[in-house]
Length: 149
Image (tube, rainbow, N blue to C red):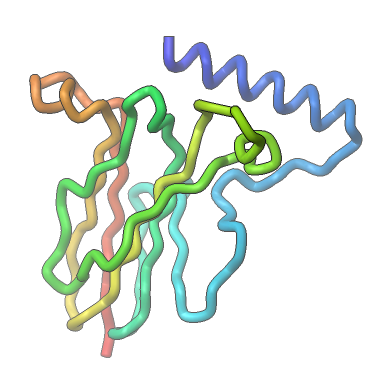
């Protein structure tokens, strides 16, 4: 059911872009790039990120929190400190309208590099009560992180 909603939504969004003559948005792109912040989206799953001590890594992944699906940090290396969590709508022009509910959102996790080292950051997507009951996750995400001096 959830996959059907995403597929239907993607098709409708593509049709609207074609009809409107707009250019396609990059789904992983943050609204505003912040200096000193390294970004990782779904396309970085399984890859490596290298960042210096003191810099921030922001992992932004799409989900449907209004249906209970959220990303959770399930493995965090000691050289990273989780410093912030936030969500933002994937289509703010529509989703920020009065009375609008639902829709996909980006969940963002900010990690600050505190000491040099290498480790794996892991996140799992699902409904927390289903995951606690032993259901398999809807999605997984991992990054190998190397923090340098």
